[in-house]
Structures are given as C-alpha cells and as structure tokens.
Length: 206
Figure 1 (cartoon, rainbow, N blue to C red):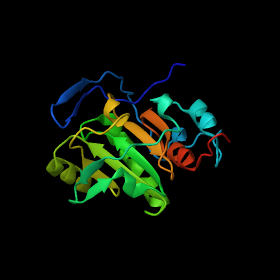
Figure 2: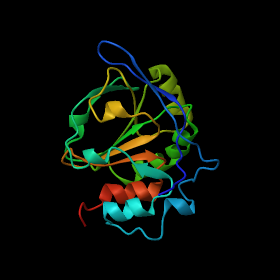
Figure 3: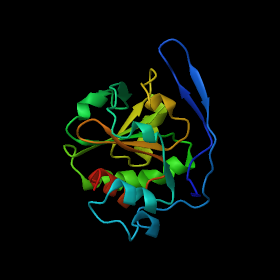
C-alpha cells in the first residue's frame, strides 16, 4: 500500500544511561500538510467509535509502526517536562495517552501541532494525556511551546526509554496508549485531528 507520509528526514539522538546512540532517519516530507479543518482531518468513512482496522484503512498521511507491540503493555519510563515536573508513563494509567516523538525543526511535526492543540481542547486532563517528547534542550522547547501556544505537555528526553520507544527512527511518531497501559496503535507520520480522536475512542476488535 503506497501512501504519502508526512515525515521529516532527521537525525534522532537517544541518550542511553551509558552511551549515546545515534539513529539516522530516512523519510519523505509531503509538500502541503493538512490543517485541523482540512478534508483529510475528517475522513467521511470514519465513525465514532470505529475499529482500529477501519481507521488504518482510511489513513492517508501515516502508516502503522511497531505492529507487534499492539496490545502489549508499555514499560514505564520518565521524562522531564519544560515546566520542571517529572512525568512517568505510569502516571497516566486510567486515562488514554498519546506519546508523540517530535522536534521543533521538523516540518511535519510542526504541521501536527494545531491538531494536537485542538485534540487537547476536546478532552479533559482526566480523560486524555498528551506527552510530546523531543531530544532538544529544555530552553529551546520552552520558547517554542510559548511561541506556538502549545497547551499539552512538552518534555525533554533524557535517558533512553525502553522498547519500543527507543526504536523510534522517524518523526513524528505517535504511540496511542489505552487506559490499561497497553499500546493500542503506533502511527508513523502526521495524524490528523479526527483520526487521533477516532483512535482514542476506537474499540479494539470492534
């Protein structure tokens, strides 16, 4: 299946406890990225709640990543948010969670920001967590978040996270994690607003 992915060619650096692993990223960037109100953000075939399979079949700007991890528990790890707070993945048990790997210089990641901002507005903090993780400096992230009106949690990646998060080689990559702490789906590329909403509310096996 051929799709136009909205992914930036990049170098993604993960800092493990002992050494620094450098990962080369290869992907393509679509010339024009959809906004939250564009047609691609609300595919006519999507209904809520939809099955994950039907959502995947209608996707045009992203592909499934790490499919073998679907339904597996996400191991805990911690990151430091730009507000100085430490966030553990386990803190989000009992709510849906998006873990987004991104960077401020990545065009596709920047195109996805308005979608995430609107998604944040749709759900309360008790219903949905959005954790956007970058390997850039906290100061750079803090300035970028303020300049772009980001209303969700932005954090700096410190030590290397566990698999499959440590295997991310292209951005944006988004892990959709269910209330029970299992990975529902991982998307490689830009996920539009209504698609993210549908995945959050999807019934597994529906």
